[in-house]
Amino acid sequence: MDITELKALEGKYLASVESRIMNPVTAWLNPRLISIDHNRMECEFEVRPEMADPLGILHGSMRSAMLCDILGILANHPGDEVSAITTGMNIDFIGKAFVGEKVRVIARVINKGRSLIYMSGEILNEKKQIVAKGSTSLFVLEK
Image (cartoon, rainbow, N blue to C red; front, side):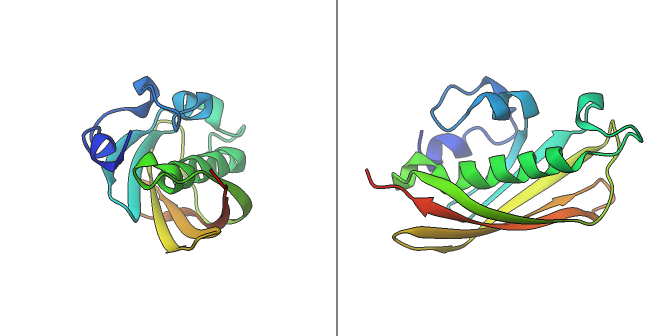
């Protein structure tokens, strides 16, 4: 699946997509692809009860999973014939999102080199407040 094929999925849920870049975590999180290009990807997630802490707030581990998943898909879309694995991730949990709310994850490529890819991402709640913000580096694997 290349970037053109991914672009054709805008507005659709990725859980049903059969591709090597979609995995069981993506299926479980069930993001809806809002937009994608070579350097930016935006998805929407619904905060479900099993994603929340006892207060009904989106759990930090779910925020991490959402960011890592969308950043990884953007880094690994096969149109670039890239395979990359996360080497480190820093996340700040800044705000809140509640069960039933939809959040947006925006992933951006900061720099794509021969051996490392640097990326950033953020999660916004329905009020467009930052819920989490993070950065990651990915190691490009040899073919």
